[in-house]
Image 1 (tube, helix red, strand yellow):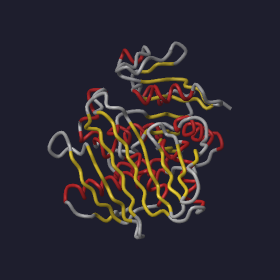
Image 2 (cartoon, rainbow, N blue to C red):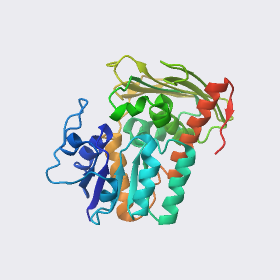
Image 3 (cartoon, rainbow, N blue to C red):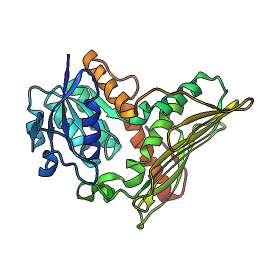
Image 4 (cartoon, rainbow, N blue to C red):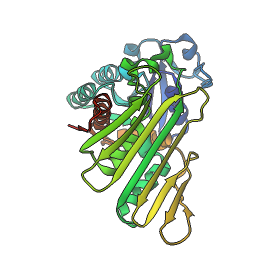
Length: 333
């Protein structure tokens, strides 16, 4: 059985998903939809290359895409502030939904998406790709095995040049994107929740290019244990600054470290450092393959539930409140 996909939004992530589906067995992009005429011709722009749409159905309005009876699932790759609106409309049209991260602009909108999923009896999958990224997956396996004792400290870091390439520059509109904290930093927030559970409180500091803009955020997470867990996200660096995602996790018996090339190394307290073998492929391939299999088998994801993705948005909201007030904020889920 081939799951037929309609992609809504042909920006950078729309292209990434399109290219990924082409490598997956049992899935085919049947149709695409975008307002931009050049993108409907396959020209993604902003240096992201092109895709061949000659054998795909092409729509200009999302309602037309949702009405296509051949489609099983809509892959929402729209700007963050449209995630809830588009996902809910697709589910009302009878389609399952795969939605790019972050789940929604607010946790309230995320709750509306979950309610629609339950009411319409449609699957809702949230594309938090780091939960599927091989080095992160292996690190989580090692930590949860308990082989090296408890985690004492962990540091996650994600840095980027300023993203000035988005459609109508929506990423730089805080009301639409949440800027760095919700668009970039949310990756590490989501993985921290996936690895350690829901934090009791957060303490954040931020900086920005403009007053009130959170373009650089550093947060400490309180899990009620004797641990120091922090995450840093930044995108105020000059255009062209190389993107990097790294982490270091110090356990009682060893330290795990992932460098900017996603190479994972284990440094034991006793013995020599050793490279850790991880699964082949990238997080997008594993993520979309997992979601397609869930749809085929009519089951929910056991990796990322809509509720857990909503919790990540709620944690970000608490971090932003902490940054504004200068105080630790209890996270209420």
